[in-house]
Structures are given as C-alpha cells and as structure tokens.
Amino acid sequence: MTIPADHPRKRSLEERHKMEQAFLKGIVAATGMIAHGRGEALDYFLGEKTSAQAKVQIEAAAAKLILAKWPVISVNGNATALCAREITELAKAADAKIEVNLFYRTPQRISLIEKEFAKLGAKILGTNPAKKIPGLNSKRGLADKNGIWKADVVLVMLEDGDRTGALRKAGKFVIAIDLNPISRTAKKANITIVDNITRCIPLLAEKVNGLKGKKIAQLQKILSEYNNKKMLRKSEMRIRKGVRERGA
Ligand code: ATP
Image (cartoon, rainbow, N blue to C red; front, side, top):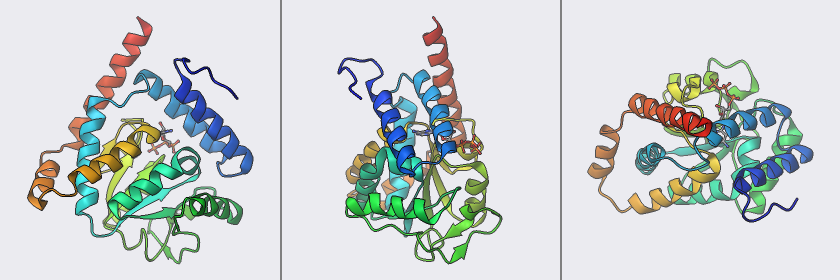
C-alpha cells in the first residue's frame, strides 16, 4: 500500500495497514480491529495530534514511572501491532518490564507476540503466568509472578474497565492510555493519557528520560498537583471542540 506523502491522514492510514497485516498474521484479534476503529474515530476529532491536556497527563505518568519500584507495561495484540518498538524503548527508559495479557489468549497468539518483541531484543513476561489477579474470570486475570503480580505501577493500553478495576483493587497504581476519556478504564485509572498510543508512547519515553535526573520531591510535586478527574474533563472538552470544528 502506497500512501501519498501529503495525504492529510497518512499516519492513520499507515496504522490501519499495520493493523490489517497484524490481523492477517494472527497477532491482532478480530475484536481488536473494532477497538482500533473506535480509537481512530476519537483521534479524528483530536485532529490526530497530541493535545495540551495529554502533555500534562504524560508528564504525570512519566513522574510516576520514575518513582515506581516495579513498573510493568501490559501489552496486547493491538499494542504490539502498532508500537512494539516504541514500547521497548519506553521499557528501557523507565526500567520497566513488559508483560503480555490477552483477552483472546491462545498459545499461538502469545508466541507470535513474544517473537515480535524478541526481534527487538526484548524478553517479555506473561507467556507462562502462574498467578491470577482476583475478580477476573477470563484469562485476562493471569499474571506473571515477576511482572504484573509484583508490580506497584502498571501501564495499560486498549484496556477494558473490568481489568483496570481489578488491578486497582489488587493495589496497583494504574496508568492508562485511552483515546476515550469517558471509558470505564479512563475513569478507573489513577492517571489517564487521552492520546493515541503511537504518538504518546515515544513522548512518554522522552519525558521519562527528561525527568530522570530530577529530585524525588520535584516528581512528587508533579503528582500531587495532578488531578485525573479534572484532566479527563478537559480531554473530553477538547474532543467536543474537535467535533464542532470538524462539523463547521
Ligand atoms: P471500557 O471497558 O474501559 O469502557 P471499552 O470496552 O469501551 O472500554 P475496549 O474496546 O475494550 O473499550 O478498549 C479499547 C479502548 O481503547 C477504546 O476506548 C478505544 O477508544 C481505545 N483505543 C483504540 N485504539 C487506540 C489507540 N491507538 N490509542 C489509544 N487508545 C485507543
């Protein structure tokens, strides 16, 4: 597929192509394609740009990742298809583990995702999980004893509200990336970044690297001044503004 360089939606069309390829390979589940479409619609109203609100959310998330003792990035098929390389870079910057967690978990999909990260030199956890997060019936509850089970901070993306809620109940601090500021995940997470994972993960890695040398008190100040509920309202207003602008 060749997309003209000046196509206004070049980036989102490239993402569609990646998703299609990953779906055909078996990395992405059919429902993952639907979730992607929902995200794409919201991103359209954001003008496919990282908003000023998302930048504040990213800064708070970066501060928390630096302060974390055992941070873990939870990945699924969509995340792997769209930004395995960027997630690997973020994991390096934040000294975090990467753990695979799938709703439609099959040994074949797990192995395909494991290989995608192995190609980038990353060894992922969750391929043979022995623990279970309470309150989740599906295989989504499975957790690696050296990964999410042990984590104090978990970064999730394209997540559903049930798992986010269960992780919170298990005492985890949850950072979510979700283009929908009114989803259950967005509301249940401690910090929600309302942005496309393909844009905000590199920005998050950059911010982690930028804040790493700062004093603990300074990082704690960023977090104490951060209010997720307020920021979600602002993100929602930004999307509503995008709807009006697009319709004008
Ligand atoms: P919840 O249970 O939290 O209300 P849901 O069931 O509505 O979530 P899912 O389809 O499970 O939603 O999760 C997908 C979420 O991820 C959606 O809110 C969608 O907007 C968002 N999303 C899809 N693609 C991306 C992306 N590339 N970057 C960030 N978020 C995305």
